[in-house]
Image 1: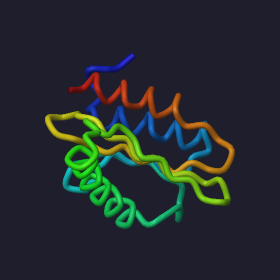
Image 2: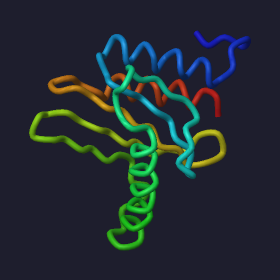
Image 3: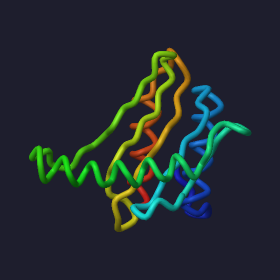
Length: 127
């Protein structure tokens, strides 16, 4: 249940911390369309936050190109997986009056959809 006394950012970051802890994720970030973080949770020394923000900006451009060139309306997600099975997920959706990017760094052999879906639903309750 969402408390009226807790600010949206604090509530979202509390859920993100639970995902990092319970899902053993390295990081979960919510970026604005300008690449600024709106909320975050990560383990210490997990990754370069600025590089993750840069990738989210590049993928926002890819989203626009996919719509223009490929007639893919509102690209929802980009999934990257390495040979070591480590994953980075970027999910695009509207929130807080803008398009945001939810980014998650997922360790090998871990699922992500349930956590990212639940987090997206929580974020959407504030908008």
